[in-house]
Figure 1 (spheres, rainbow, N blue to C red):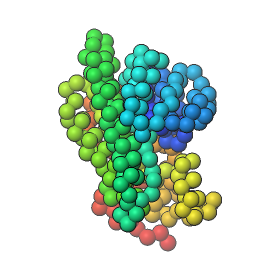
Figure 2: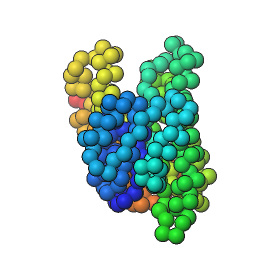
Figure 3: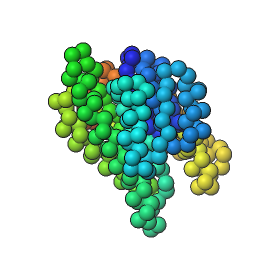
Length: 263
């Protein structure tokens, strides 16, 4: 499905990003993983094995997108697919909104991925138009919170809504260049980071058992590997020529939802 393609996945030392990187490898791709914690990134690269490169960069740094792109080209010589997965998940409501937190989260969650897309686009366009070239695909990992979000996810939700609009905008702009861009609005997923946040908010170690059935009609929350399957589909030609779309990776409808009480 992704034979010999080079895929960059940001924020891929753990969680959804790691699962996507692993799934891309299993589908035949060469993968560049990224993170800001050198120890975790190197450990993730060792777990993934061959055909993996890694780059350490903090997306809060304005130079990070260029550093990341250059590392991919240095390691593999090209870039065929980009997954913008890295994001800050800080809790914030309108009552405790602070300028510094807002600026930092919007920088990491919106400005950095858009800058990385801008840097990668000329390369992707050139490869797509070259004889025997490869059409490129960009997948932004969004969130169902982009539609509204919980009260304590104000800035996070706003950032994912911004990326949702940007995905559609860029998809329209670059469609003639054989570069596709789509966003996956992902539902509540069990990751290491989510577990840590739940504990910080005072929930017990078994918090997953207390998740209401309306949020997990299948009996549990989404798993990173399930999200990864969808990401790989949108990276591959199987989803071509669709672009500029927002796809909900969720267990239930978001718009017009009228859930049935569980007895």
